Image 1 (spheres, rainbow, N blue to C red):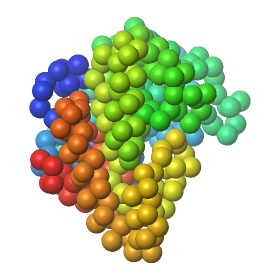
Image 2: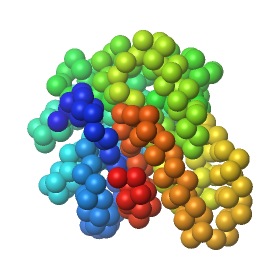
Image 3: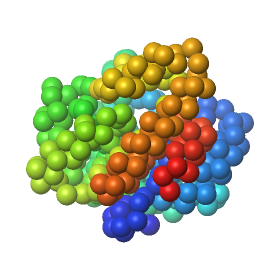
Image 4: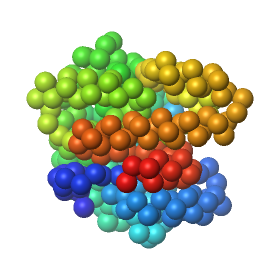
Length: 281
């Protein structure tokens, strides 16, 4: 089922994001975690691509997840990809029965000279995918602005280019302040962008995880959450318990506003996402 069909229905949409384990021997561990989440009837599982311009995606893992009863939406980055490589990749996905793809620019590698320059921006990748396949393309949105963007408005202007190129759905970066998300949706709608906007949700697993995300992206931490992170820094179980309560509250409020969907960044662990979903569904 393509993205436009998935998000064309009114019931809440749940999806999960995972990343390819470094070792093939760890694939069964990932599949066991996903099996626990099957209870919540996810619309799909998204599979990340390589960080830093490196491709660590796996056609084998796409097939494995599909064979275990999940629809799969692979990520694909273009910053270091030739047009020929992209053509081959999307053809292989279509042959595997994949219908959706998350089209991203990707991280610029430490040595940009190793990259070709067939694609510079995600909107160029979206346009190429739509012209050369039947895949439905989703794109990323950033409620607090992309870390490289001059400001939020310029980032939304770039988002509009991706939608005009044919993207059918927006999946947001994680956020911990719902007001940032609601404000973002309003600004995006004011630009005439009317595709579904899916909220990116990240369970809180540790203070180290949160601090890492703050460094990597434009993510603000509300005072209440920051106080608890400091309080429970040496007590991960207490932080995780509070985190489940905090993110449960986020999700309830989002569902009450009829958000298009909740997309959980699981970090390949099921427990926190499972508890949050048990609380809200």
